[in-house]
Length: 183
Image 1 (cartoon, one colour):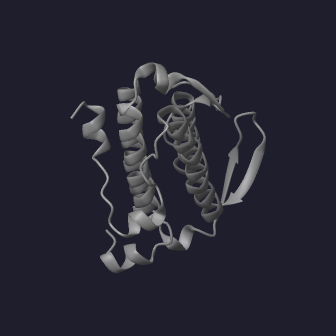
Image 2 (cartoon, rainbow, N blue to C red):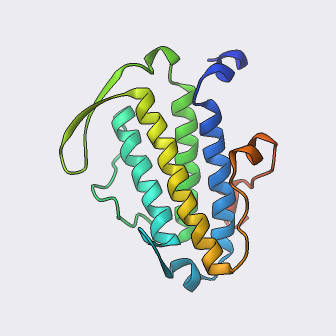
């Protein structure tokens, strides 16, 4: 088990915690929408808020399979894993905890090591573990930005802030697993 000092010096600890925080804030707003708005196509790459949130979960499952060898990710990036948004939120909460555990269990000494993997189309690649983790968190941020825009379009109001600085300043986030369960 890592000491607090070791955890504070792991370059991805803050990003894993931020990722969980930002997803909880985003999903809280998404779960508050009427279903027709939540599913409405607004012109983002995966169509709707629903499509975008499913895509991020799909991509995380693909990357975590590549990094850990565990899981059964879909082969298509546009797969709708969950039609029910509460089930999607519960799966997101579980995946965010899985990401936190992955980072907590990753020895900093392994970050420069290469990881061999195949894309969903079967093309093989070799990439440094730290670069994969950077991509994982950056990809989340990219699509959360699209989801944030969806919320702006659908509500005509400013969505909750997802800025890293707000996380660092202690702005609260709900417990996503409790939200998903209707609590």
